[in-house]
Image 1 (tube, each protein chain N blue to C red):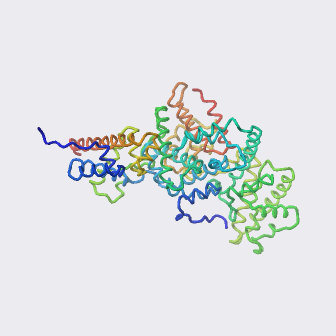
Image 2 (image 1 turned 90 degrees about the horizontal axis):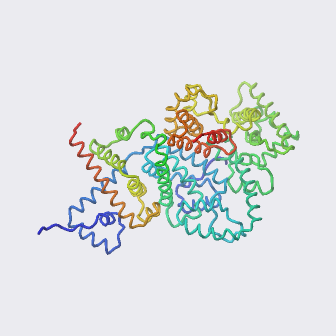
Image 3 (image 1 turned 180 degrees about the horizontal axis):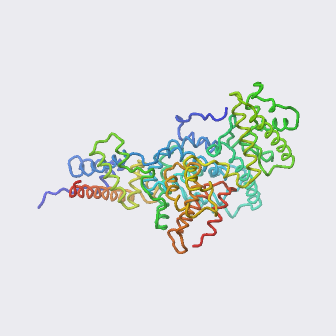
Length: 401
Length: 200
């Protein structure tokens, strides 16, 4: 006959340690643990190991968390433009039909999913379809406009520095600009009053820019520079086109003047930089409106260095030499994985997809999946109407399984 | 004027969530700032590589943003969010298993490994070795065990939250966590025994 003690199951010991037991059970386990060095030791070992894991230093690359923050900011902005947060718990909202596709789909992932899904599925048959179609059309219109706004709005800062003095417009403000049915061209960056003022100037009612802040010092830079590239949407109405043509000429003239000036005053520097930037962007956009969304971004220093080293263009194209691509692959991967690719992430990933594709032949399922995964991420990360997305979609379509 | 953002570092989670739901998406930044580190650590532990962890965390924030109206304001945001991260990470490793290869699956994304990072710290040799053992042992566990331990270690989540994240009953959390901890201890013992047999 041995004197062996009967130990509680380890589930109970660990639950005791985690504070997850009912008071009665806790008391029972505690009574055992107090007198049992074996069980105490087990608990101590686990506690010690977990404490060590918690103390483990971060494995994220330097600067990654900031990069993550920026990436999340951009993605959330896109999510906001695609419908924002889910509907609240059906308060009396004038019978607006729920967005079935997105809401039900999203609910599947989260807690409360099944209950909510069941509820919504029941609602579906009673939907007034005219209202659904109307809402869908309105949503599509809102999406188009908001995407334009997003491209130039505060969340675009990671892609494009906001000019000094630009107004940060939040979601309610964007909606406001839609209420009157106006095309909210550049609404995120430019205050409407400023825009009106700029147009009046162009119509010849007042000449402010030509004798603006840089020379006279009497006008504030914010007043002088109407953030002109905010007006550069190709879908403008004919009247707006004329006005913007005039504005374009005027900006071009002013930019030339600035170039001719030897040493602009410090106060005028930002306004002048904005004007020069506007002129360059106008030229780029006129040359290739579609590519503008991607090509407007100068490559970051790390990406740029790789591009130069291997003589690659900023965005992958069929003309890229396969040898250069194969040679650049490991550096591109390192850049991506380091988290330092920043706003170049999608372009880097497109290159990686193409580099993997060099090794691919139909029937190689693992490589196929990897390539598809990269293309899909590029599509997700790129702007809806961008050249990069178009390229990734085409390349994905042409990939033979 | 312009870009200056309000300091919301002292604003409770529930108030920030309300701001975001009401349309002030800039406020979401603060939620990201509060949770990005544990979220990445959790995702990284489960997926075991930087690229997947990055994808998981970014997608999780978008999911969380969309689902904010369902957030219970009486709770803290972080545990709720970490359950989303855990689910996304598990989904990612399931897909990865189907893909059979892991793209960019390289530990030490910036060229350094854990040992390098530890060498920069103030830990003594024995403490560093214990930490390396713990990490290596964790990495040897099954996905299931690693996930549940990571939720406990990185998220410090109660069993009910872990159950919600993994979509299993609380009783299963108890038993699975216990098996995972036992497996972790066993792996550590193996590593130590191996080193004892092969002193460097």
